[in-house]
Amino acid sequence: MRAMHRRTFTTMALAIGVFGSSAATASANLAEDDIVLGDPVAKVTVVEYLSPSAIWAAEWHRDVFPQVRSTLVDTGRVGWALREMVTLPENFSVAGFLLARRVGRDRYLPMIEAIFAAHAEIYRTGDFEGVLRRIAGDFGLSVEEYRACLTDEAAIKAIYRRSEAAEAAGVVGVPEIVVGDNRFQGSKVATLSAVTEAVTRAEAG
Image 1 (cartoon, rainbow, N blue to C red):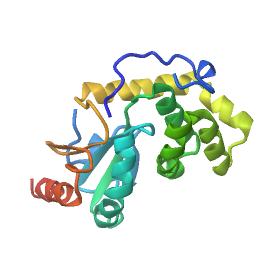
Image 2 (image 1 turned 90 degrees about the horizontal axis):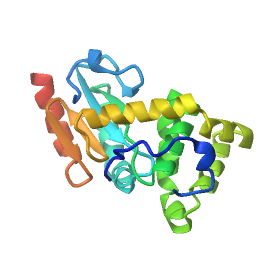
Image 3 (image 1 turned 120 degrees about the vertical axis):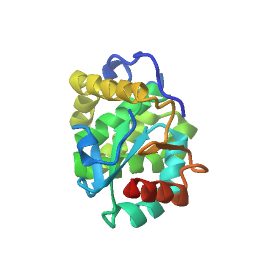
């Protein structure tokens, strides 16, 4: 799914209820805002660009990432850095990132994956706001906390800043997996074997 190239999302207050450089192999290349899984000081850092509204990112997390995580991340072989890119539907994407940031680093990915799991309902009904409100409740957020989260202007600006950094790094869609000079996009390309081979080359480099 392609990235958003214009900042058309200015305030989540208007959105509620409406659909409207690559990583290197050293942990020093981690950004302050990265959500890091695995070993943050591993020799190899893998960067994943994702969006909670992206169907292909949801597919990759369902079909490929569990194997990648058990083989490379949970074993401590790599540090896995999650980075944000806003994609269509823009309001949905930003809202998902806001909620994931709100629940904290340890629950960031579980929140994103809960949203991925609700894609069928969201895209069938068009009610992303209602579904996200329910998911937020499952993570312990009250309705008031949910609404405050989605109208946090500083957090919204930070999401767009991170998304613009992804575009500046040459990312044009998600999911994109970056291992050193190797870039993989989509489930058919970013396979376990392809990512593992790139990690092995990076370890040897």
